[in-house]
Length: 402
Ligand code: AMP
Ligand code: MG
Image (cartoon, rainbow, N blue to C red):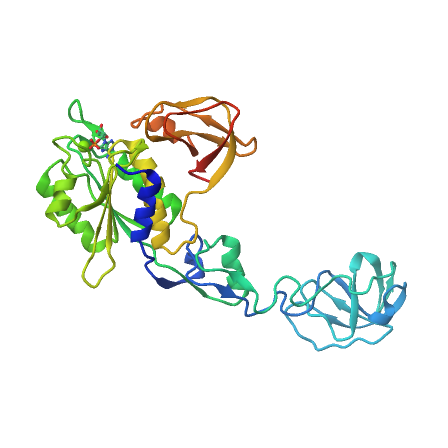
């Protein structure tokens, strides 16, 4: 039995990023940038008007009076106009600034009659001109490698004229749920003791939420040595990561370890001092000429499977995908209720972080099978072994969804 910290350290030491691929902008949001990027274009890329109005010469700034309108400069057309003192050019938002412009006067501060315009307010020099490079200069860092690409970051790439972004390859994750008691949702339960398979949906959904991997889900396997072996073998052929839920504990029907052994896979470790999630297992196989396979044996109890996935599997997947931030995000919270961890293992309590109030409220039955409480939670609160976390104390919670 090892500590959760030691388990994560061991896993991350064994995981190396899968490398880069190029994706189009439409598929880039949520992906991890594989390399740093710098600006090839300044933003704005030319001096432009911030308003609909009149471009005027520097000599006419700070004054009122009447000017001669010598032309029109809309956005999307380049007319190569030039201004002299006493002249104005009708201009629109986004249009390039004519040579000689000292300021743009907004339409609301003018009065137009024929080819003459009267300035009702004196304009400040430089007013309503957006300067080239005011936002971003050529050569500036857009993002560094390992950054998750938000909609705004991908749109920044678009504004640079980039059609593709180099991102980390996402691991293919095979999901195998095990247990002779499992029934597929949508089919009536056939006998007492049969339960619906919720872990397959839980694990696939977690990967969907986190956008760090592509999932391949097999039908649940009964507790049958040969069947397990065949399913695991099949997933190892196509997936860099294999998640096996259930059958990893110490019961007579827990056949995952023997099935892995028959495939030549010895666990790097088995059992972690974490609650829920003790029977967690990690194994690694070196495939000839291919990326190594990472096998995670998760406890069958849904909350245990979920918590160990959050603590150990997601960080590994993020590292494989090239992320610089592999651990779950944490927030500082005030505890609304005393939590007593009477266990010798570090315990992750499920509950709700109210971000506005900065508080954590434990929710539901704190047991490894209690999926309802988990379904209402957005955070986990770790409490060290044999420790009381008092009401009103400040704690560090781990965010599950944002
Ligand atoms: P195991 O780890 O196989 O001993 O399973 C522990 C508990 O989790 C048992 O009560 C199982 O019935 C339950 N369980 C195992 N797999 C699943 C699953 N895929 N969906 C829901 N419950 C499960
Ligand atoms: Mg089982």
